[in-house]
Length: 430
Ligand SMILES: *Cc1c(COP(=O)(O)O)cnc(C)c1O
Image (tube, rainbow, N blue to C red; front, side, top):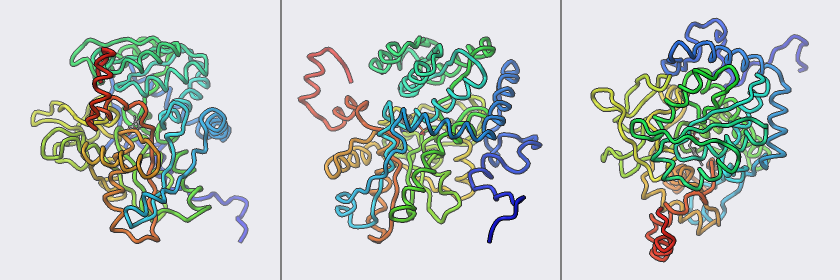
């Protein structure tokens, strides 16, 4: 049957999710179920409206997506491969396990997808400067990389405590031409850097774009970040479909939620189970974790410009989070994922620090792949479930990044004494 000339293809699941039919008229623009929205000081309203307008125009222009894919293919090794883990699958004796290799991206993780995408929007807006906040420094390095590549001025806000903890990343951001501003306020960590970054933006929005790093924050950031990151799921679905067939279950780790959203958006219309793995830290009952969706310490609330599940105490004060992986150590989570969780479309699990270190070791020993600690949460989730699945079923894991950056944490967690004394001689700390 050939399509009639005026036939409009029905929108894919990800389109219906990010741009519902009443999107343009809906007063609740930027909501996913009860989550999302935009709760920012009035001074930022016009900037966010401008960004909404620019993105709405840009995403309808098919040249933007092909330009984006072109840059990613020639600059960041895309399409990243899918690797069958034969030895790990045999060892576990259950499902066949496949990895989507986001670790092979330029700068070592999926974060580059989003920043390059936003860089293209900056060019469209004709702005000359980008700002960003970063906790562990990975998003800062990715943003500084993009700024250098596109010839933009770049300022990175980082809590003073994090600057001390993440010296190598600060070094590279500066070498890449960024100005790194240590924030001394409050606990001098990520949330204080976010506040300072918003303050900068309120006064600089004329020529400056705030490149937010994950699928969180006020509308339209969750939408924009998920839209660019969907390249992961789109590629992975095609790669699986053209070779072995679609996976039965897909795993991704969940910090702010951008790599998980990017992967899951590719499979929304399929009979594929989607599993998000949060940071279980020292265990869900210890209070020392960052599990917002599986833990019972998180409640919906409004902070940092949007509504979602936040880890908070009885009085609604934000709680401290803990995870062996800095990138999952965050109190909020994507409003889109919160909604998909409520709907039952995504199942959430948590992996503890201990399980993650065991999974990291197993993946290194059986496959010669060093995953980032963040990504290894997804691997740990899959390792737990694979043995119960039949050998002709398939698991796909998003390996969001590589583990080189985690060398000190991993050496410490593995209790490697030779390493520790080496570091002490060098006068460094992990
Ligand atoms: C930053 C980071 C994450 C967490 O961010 P999401 O937005 O949840 O994807 C996960 N994996 C790696 C490798 C990271 O660098």
